[in-house]
Amino acid sequence: MSFVHQKCRNVDVPYLGSQIYRTSVPDDLVKWNRDWADYAPPNYTDKKVHGQAWADPEINDHNQYTFDPKTLSPINPIGRTGLAGRGLLGRWGPNHAADPIVSRISDEGHLEFVAIQRRDNREWAIPGGMVDAGEHVTQTLQREFTEEAMNGNIDKDSLKELWSDGKELYRGYVDDPRNTDNAWMETVVFNFHDSNGLLNNVDLQAGDDATALRWIRVDSKEPLYASHAHFIDLLKSAHSK
Ligand code: BGC
Image 1 (cartoon, rainbow, N blue to C red):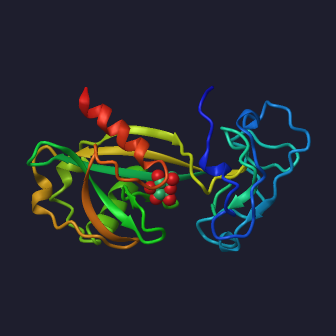
Image 2 (tube, rainbow, N blue to C red; image 1 turned 90 degrees about the horizontal axis):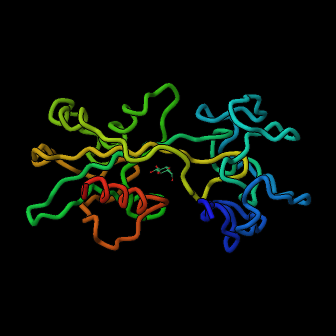
């Protein structure tokens, strides 16, 4: 079977920050082309989303994606999630994030990457974040790393060489627990590999939404946030070629 999302079909706990339970969607009914005439998931958009500058208006009228002729909402490209509306996501359709993986070979010869501990759920993660309105994703990658892993110390020059040599590892849909039938996460993952020890002269320090920082070896079994373990697998394969 082709890829089906899992994290946005969890019916054991309510949708994040709410008391709303998703409709249970079995694996074989995820794809929209499978008939399910009675499918009527709860419709939920968190109050925090209403009226925000980073969010779409209540009524959605764009047409870049396949959309539901009944509700005029964009349709999750992977399939059903058991929840309609936007949940905690600001945008109808794709909500864009960017994940910078900064890596190096340690003195002991191990490939490792900069990880931060997230303030919201204490999980270890790549220091990624949402693309701001009007921002280019290359800016987001550097901004998020600077905010979360350098505590906002903007030192444009010392890492110039590192930022100029990024390699794209992934671009597209993410299996994220916030996804709904009408709003979902997409991300762009870039690897910035420090072959020249540039980071030895930089003060890495958790900041903003991050409470701690450390280098994690790619072969450690450390559980990571959202789909980040998958992105680290991509990093490993990119470096084993
Ligand atoms: C996070 C990214 C993550 C994305 C999708 C964003 O909120 O900051 O690191 O890849 O969600 O799960």
